[in-house]
Amino acid sequence: SGLAASGAVQVVRGQRRSEAEEKCVRWLREPPLSGGLGPAVLDEEALAMAAEGGSGMLEELLQAKVAIRPSQLCDRMEKTIILAGLHHCGVLGQCKAQARAQWSAALQATANNASLTARSLRKHVATQRDLANQRLREDEDSRGWEDFCLPVIAKAELL
Image 1: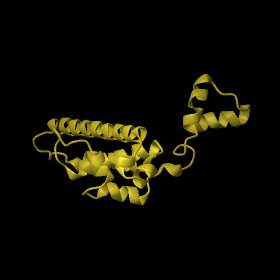
Image 2 (image 1 turned 180 degrees about the horizontal axis):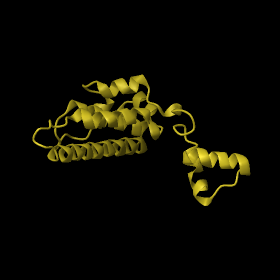
Image 3 (image 1 turned 45 degrees about the horizontal axis):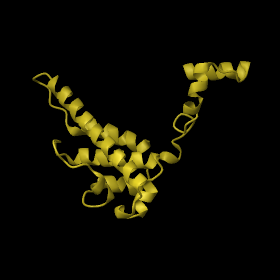
């Protein structure tokens, strides 16, 4: 309602904006806030890559599974985060089109950064799950990976 009121005030008084509004204008005009998801939604092919197991570009980009709990859902979440990162860096098409051996140093660094970010998020989600399960009373069931991974996957698919 504050944003609507601000818009109504601008209609009445004109286009003057405060300093705070000027800083937020670019952010407010981004597709998710200005009327749609825009071109940033991951395509079905990319999402299928994250959902399936086996070999491929995403399997190669996953960090080594050392000191993490095995979970197919966490793997899917991690792959989806990598895809979202590559998409927003504008290199997902290049990554899918070329064999990894042909990637430039900059493309390799971007992909590795997306992978490290995804692993960091996975560890954070695992920590949040552990904390939530430690706070349970005796009569409550523990919360599974679905409660923590599925919301992250859904958000990453919209990013």
